Every structure is written in C-alpha cells, then in structure tokens.
Length: 242
Image: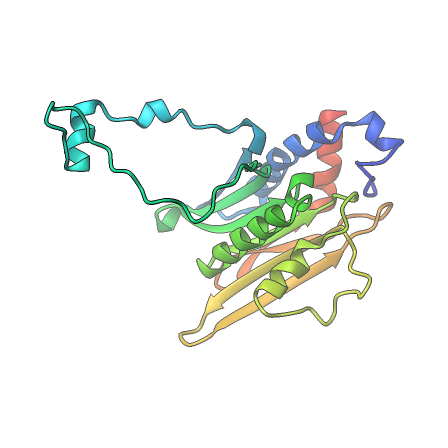
C-alpha cells in the first residue's frame, strides 16, 4: 500500500491523523518483537504535550519540613521565605509542549540500557521554531549517549526537514540528500565515540506520496542492528484503525 497524504483530502477525511499516529508506535513494537534478538525489548512511548501537567501540591513540603530545608524560620516559628532580587526580564508567555510519539529499544543484558529510539514526527514537532529546536536537541542528546535515532516523518503540511536540521546542529550536511529538501522522509543516525572523535553514520530516505515506504536500519550494538521494513508496518497500522 503506497504512502498516503494524511493531511489533505480525500484521505484526511477518511482516516483522522490522530488515530493513525497513536496506533503507529504499537505496530512498530509488534514488528520489532519478531525482529529483535531475545535480549532486546521495544516499548512505545506517547506523550501528548497538551495533556501533561504537574500537580505542584503533590511535591509541596509541610511548613516544618520546608522551614528546615530553607534553613530559616521567623521568630514566630513560621517559614521565612527568601525574597529574590528584581528580575532582569518579566513577560507573559505561553509554554506549549510538543507531542512525542516514539518507540524505545532496550538491551536487557546491559541493565535495560536504551540503545535505540524511533522518533515519529508529529505536526507539533514542526510547527514552531522552539519545537523544532527541542526535537533536534533531544535527538542530539540521544546520539551523544550512544543511542541510535531513527526519524519517521510523514507530516506533509509543514516543509521543515528535521533530519537536515539535526545534521546542521551537528555541523554536518548530507551531500547525497536531494537539494529539493523534501518535507517527508525516514532517516537513521548513529554516533560512536572512538576515543578522540565521534564517528557519525546516517541513512536517509526521502519519501513520496504514492510510493512504498523504505526499509531502514536500526543500529543496536556498535554498528550492528536489524532492518525495519516500514511498508508492512504502515499497512498494518492502516488496517488496525480503518
């Protein structure tokens, strides 16, 4: 089944993106269950930026404990809070969080160490400069921790290419990548430290609506890994949510 445009009619009217996007990590995990050696495990991870909040009351100390932590009490025994200096900047702003859809692969023989992550790009990862920077910084941090990163981006409505943004963040470029800078693509990156320098390898595949999805490598140990065929995973996801 060729790749569909999930953001434009007629297909966007037949199958809403949210349902497909939410199911895709689970279908990737099922595919990896048949591919991974026994000592590896894969788990889906979905975090909706607009749906996450922290109840500060859960973490608030009572007065006595808080006073001991602050190291100061008033003469009446109540907590004496410190007043900070005047701020250098004070503005009102929104702090929106981007959605995260990913699959994480762990090595159970190494105390369940994270070895690979598959990042499934959402529209919110590409809609704002701060979200794009956050996505790139997260991937760069994973690479520095010897975690290979695969990016699957079928978001057609925003032209930004986060794979190229990540390479630019690392001070690199891909000379074999099309100059047309396609908005949809799949890519895998892995970095290994050889003692003095980092060695970076990438595998990038521009995608096209109406064409099959590629098979991408997942790097698990040194430069070894497994190949994930995205086409049957895509088909299975469509079948599951149709």
